[in-house]
Image (cartoon, rainbow, N blue to C red; front, side):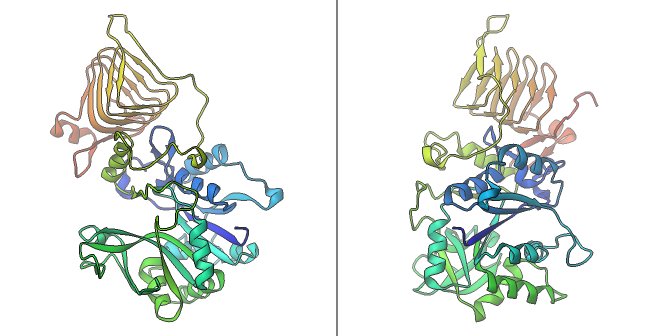
Length: 406
């Protein structure tokens, strides 16, 4: 894997995740009670043996860069290993990154200095576990210029993806980015073959494609819209089927784009299933993160005698449930739940304090929020909409540091 350089695209604004992205980049959004979204991609790299990683940052990147510093300063530069955050440096002009392809084009000098033969291009805002090594081995064995990881999705959902057709040798014969009428699989008309946004390029093919695209004034400089369709006509572009080769990771074949409030909420709720669809408990494929040292969580009776309880919930370190009830919810570190409060189907980020007799459901509450005694959230859509963001599926989002006295 020393022949490969990894580039993680982590500069997206994440406007559909607002207000959770009001002060942080999308890859830095908390997930699952203790992680950040980017931890999944980085952990996949770690376990796959990819130890030379560039993280291209841009939008409100301080939180993300701090997380990389605190949780991911684990590689040894003396061995040629690194995780390096790369903000826009305007090496090719006066513009910030103007698309996924342009972000890498502006850093071609870093790629040339790496002496890598292959470039693994990943997104920092997807939840999944994957061993990239078998995909790289396929890329080498086919002599591909580009290999695209793909998976089957219901045709009703395929218009949100890049959709491809392949021949019997897995060579991609067509590629359409977010088509209104997605093509289906020949042997399965209910499904389409969708791109996961995971690419392996041979560096010469990538360099030529990016330089050619940069010269096109009408290009949006995007891999899906511009780079891939042009490569298919003249280069060897192959599909790699997610989960087809086992590698070292157990095959739950779970992949989620958590780019909206509803998709982020549902992916979190997936973790509370009796048998979660993504396996976070594989001993040799743990998801690494940074987490402050706090005491273990606890449930305690309140002064009134109410017993604190937690039912089918994920409760991080430092949480104290004092006479309150938490059901089917995810509580990040240092959350405090007061006497008689009930929390159901909710996600609470770090250092949220829930007052006595509050009732909270179907919501995401960002960090550093203190909820006054007796507050109801998630029960009255009209009242909630006057104060907070509500998603298409009715999830209430309370922004970071919100003051109920305003």
